[in-house]
Length: 160
Image 1: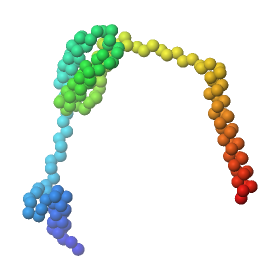
Image 2 (image 1 turned 30 degrees about the vertical axis):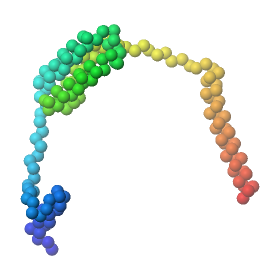
Image 3 (image 1 turned 120 degrees about the horizontal axis):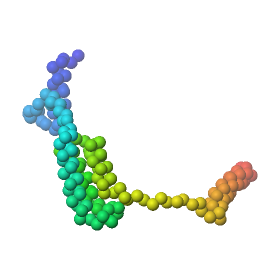
């Protein structure tokens, strides 16, 4: 039966082998201190996100307001705004997105994009001729497949 000291020695050898160390290398087998969780600094995050918003407002002021509903006209500005909020969140040890940043982004959307509603699409039925074709083609194909299976099964009985 192995002794406790033997098991510890074997464990140290395994650690060396896993790390690619030789028997002459020194190493520390003491456990490392656990990672300390940082707390989100929400008051600083509010201030930092406000800086991102001010930059976005300056950038949007350079774009004609009639183009605010066309994303292709301000996609790079919006990307920089989003990237800024993400970086600022990480800088103050907050995850992203978080409710505080989301509420600020919603305020930005309400300010710039509140008049960007899409027209309602009115759905209409296709003409009766088109509808009849769309219904009858799958029904006829299904009946043809059933007839083909029945015919093949009767024919295999004659051949066997």
